[in-house]
Length: 75
Image 1 (cartoon, one colour):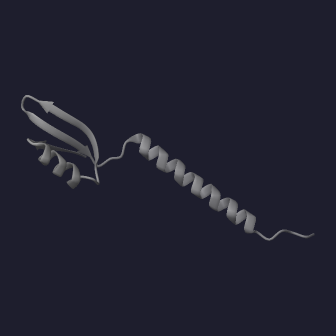
Image 2 (cartoon, rainbow, N blue to C red; image 1 turned 120 degrees about the vertical axis):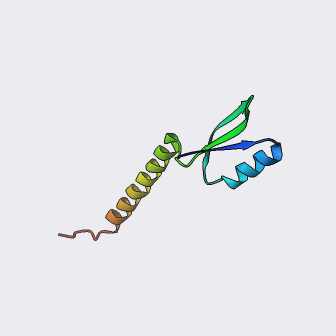
Image 3 (cartoon, helix red, strand yellow; image 1 turned 90 degrees about the vertical axis):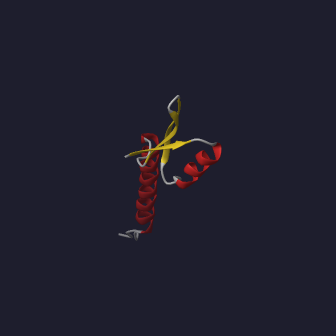
């Protein structure tokens, strides 16, 4: 979902940015009708892919650790 906030001063802009740190700033509009900051609560695809790759690496390392901890056969 996208969220659009209008600001008139740099102080208002800073306050809006600080209040929406949990969202991703996707666009800043400076129009004749006003200044707007547009946020999304959906992470950009690059971030999602990076997180998936990190999780995959964690899982692969955990599997390697489990495999290394298996008792070795002496027969």
